[in-house]
Image 1 (cartoon, rainbow, N blue to C red):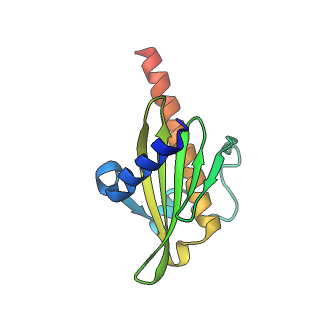
Image 2 (image 1 turned 30 degrees about the horizontal axis):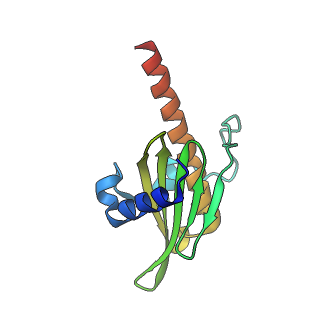
Length: 142
């Protein structure tokens, strides 16, 4: 799906009630999450771990950055909460006729750097992609 009007409607629906649409709710980027995603090591242990090579169309607006490709739609939204900068990131699967919000996370304080927000995004996209591939393989064998 790459219809800008539909993408905007989905974004507004999701951002309005993230708790309803995101299976795990709004995840906070913190030390525990970085540990879980194995992002605390300076040297990558999993050098064989493939990096995402998919390209995204980038759509910028005053409110957010939207990344779209054939598999994902990602919204990166800078905001302020109590005068403190915060970045929300929403990741949806881009299925043929609709979008399905998979995960949403927020980075604030020392965790709100562009490099860290994008590393978390890369890791989560990779994990979602792996899970989807496993589900496809399972469907084929059932």
